[in-house]
Image (cartoon, rainbow, N blue to C red; front, top):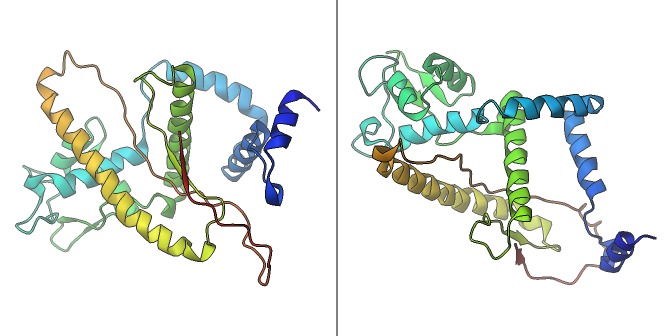
Length: 263
């Protein structure tokens, strides 16, 4: 048994708990790629091609771009009614119009293509007077397979880059990117519905507060655009659930452990 295996064996606790290894990560990645119908035998050629293409420009997040249009519609006073709700708007013409909104929130993207995509996803509808009405504040990405695939790959890419950045910088350095996880290894599965509701409510508000803050800061720096260095920023929340539910009547329940927060 090598040194790493011995160390992992010592970390095993009750109920055969063990540390996650690189093999575990590779296994779930292979399962994900199989689900996405990506041939693992082509990994090497695909990675080489991706490295070459990444030098040509910034990576583009399809779901983030769509989300920016919905966010702007709910925040820009020009597109709100007297009660602060998003107003129905014309497709083209002087503001407020969908094409005008798209040019502000997603410049460089074809407004007609965005209109078709949002309509296909059910995020907007056209009423009898041909005005565009918005139906949601954020995009339910997993309702559409293509959008879900793009969102999943984008999230994985960004998360891995965060971890890689932190590994390569001094832990005491202010350059470290924020990364914390609330973790509990004996959570009552019957409470999962309540936890999901809590995350939807508080998580949405949390993300919107940061979205608003970044938007305000970006607008304030707009006058110095030529001298300002730009970066793509993403802040995310996710819930991971692991472990099969215990069989009914099982008396060997693990002792309760309080949640912990890790860097």
